[in-house]
Image (cartoon, rainbow, N blue to C red; front, top):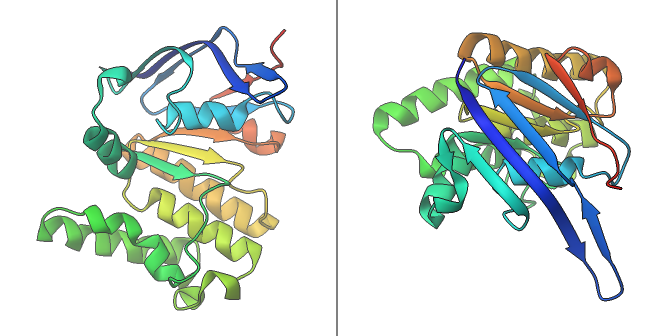
Length: 223
């Protein structure tokens, strides 16, 4: 299978007025298309930071990164935005829903960048399939403030995968869900992986979920 991620991080530094923190020192990652990768480790080792780098949200680090066969430091702003909307799906803890929009409108936000009428028709079909699969039809007209934490987590998940991206980055996607909804989310992720060869990278503290991936990467503190 083709390699879609080739990432070499020499160091990622967070600076404050009084100190600086070094994480992901000498970290290398290669991922083939269609792999399911779990990332585990204690808090503060850089798991979420790594997802932000992989997803092109953070480019402030010392290293080199090739994604989908292209050197990412050569990508222009418009191309970065297009990749983040169409080729990379984010299910991140920081992916806050917009309080003024309904759950349905939040999920459909990526459609604003849709192309042809044919493409919009396909997306409408994907939307119907998705909301049925994770059973959130009853909350579509609600605002986020009217929803439980688990309902909002499922809405964030739906928005992250609605464009059927090549790469899905999930940061603790099942953390606030009960067992039934956890299984529903994991099953949908893995179904996308099987049917569309979608590459999955999941940060999780749930070792049972982690061990269902093809590989588990353990991050440790930089020394």
